[in-house]
Length: 557
Image 1 (cartoon, one colour):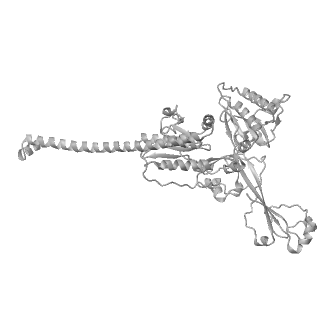
Image 2 (cartoon, one colour):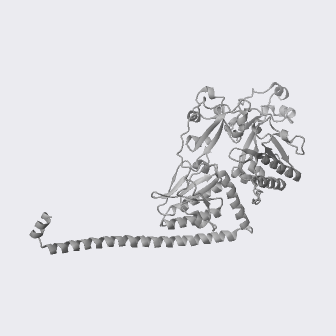
Image 3 (cartoon, rainbow, N blue to C red):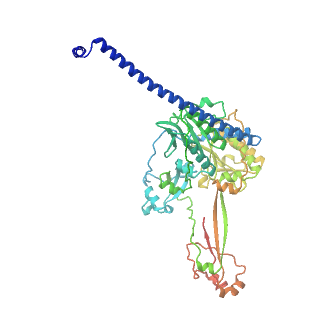
C-alpha cells in the first residue's frame, strides 16, 4: 500500500491510475472475447462442414441400401428374419466367452508333473479337443512348449487352440476377409480415426477416446460401437445391447457383420458416430491393402497369434495314428527319359457342416425338425465342430450330438443304451469307443418314424435332467442351401488330399518281355521311406517280371 502511494505520487494522480487499470482490463477482455469467438466460429464451421459431408455420405449409403434391397429376390424379409434368429442363437454360444478386459496371458511351458493322463471319465471334456503329437512338431515349437527332452518324443497331449484376432482373420473365409478390408478402408476415410490391434481385438479410437472394437465371435466378424443401442432398437440398424458387460462399457452396441447388407448398416452407423464426435471426412486417403494369407497353426503359435491350452496327456488306450508320408521332390530326369506317367487322385475330407449342406432334402428336413425340437428346450445351445454338432443344457452338460455317417443322420445321447433295452427304440451301444464314452447311445435316423423316435428319445433325456420346453419357441428353417464342392473347399469346409501315383515304364530292353508278363499286373504301392532303386523288388515280383521296375506310389497333400 505504501509502495502504491509512492508510485501514484511520483507518476500520476490516483484517478488517472484507476482509469489506466480499467482500460487495461477492458482491452484484455476484448482480446480474450475475440479469441473465444474465433474458436467458436471455427468449430461451428467445422461442424457444419462435417454435417454437410456426412449428410451427403448418408444419402449415398441409403441409396445403395435401397438398391441392394430392390435387387434382392422375393422373400428378402423372410431371409432377414432368419438371419436375426441365427444371431440370437449365436448369442447363446457367445455367453461362454469372457467379456472382461483381461491382459494377455503368457504361454507357459508344459510341466509333466502337473499334466496328468486324461481318464475315460474325463473324455467328455476333451471330445472337441485335438491331439498334439510332440514328435511331429518343429524344434522351435517344442522349445516354446518346453518339450525338448527325448522323453517327450512319444508323448501325446489333448490340446485346445485359442486363436487371437489375427489368427481368426487369416483362417476365415474369403468373403469375411473382403468385408474386413472394405470396413478398414471405410474407417480410414474419416480424419483422425486410428486402429490399434491387440491379441483379442482391434480398437478404433480418436485421441484417447475409444469409438469402436473389432473382434470375432466364433467365425463371425463383429464390431462394437460407442452408440446407444436403445436409439436404434426399433430400426433396421439395431444391434445387440452389451452395456451390461465391463468389456463393452464404452462401446455397448454390438453388430455382427454376416453379409454385405450388414456391412452397409455398419457404414451408416459410422456416419452417426462421426457426427456425434465431430469427425470430418478425410480429404485424400489411400486405399489400404492387407496381407491376409492363411498360415499354419504352428506359424501362428510361434508368432504369438495363437495359444495352446493343454488339457492332459492322451491315454494309451487311444489308437496311435501314423503320420502321413510326404514326398515333395521333383521327378528325376532319368524318370522323365524312361517315360513316367503321373496320375493324381483326390480324397475329400468333408466336415459335418459340408455333409449337411450336400445331403439330400430328406436328411435336411429330418435334421431341421429334430434340431428345432432340441433347441426348443430352455437354456439349450449348440456348438459345431469338424465332425459333429453338440447340444448343451449348460456350459458343460452335453446331452446330445449329431453326426453324419455316410448318408445317414445319427443321434448320440448321453443316456446309457441299457436304459432302452426292451423298448421300441433300436439303439446301438457305443460304450467301447473312447470318443463316445460319454455319448454311448447311437440312434440312426433313416425315416419319418425314426425322426419321431429321435424326438421321443430327446424328451426322455431332458425329462431326466428336469429341463422344460419353451412354449414361446418358434421353429426355424435349419435346412441349408446346397453348395458345390468347389465352394466348400474354398471356404474351408472340405479338405482335399491329393494322392500322386507315379508309374514307371519298363526300360527299352525289357519292353517286349514285360508286355507279355505284366499286362494285367496291378500297380503296387510302397511307402516313400523306401529308396527308389531297382534293387527294391520282391522275390514274387522278380518271378513275374524280372526286368521291370517297381511302381512307386507317393502321397502328397
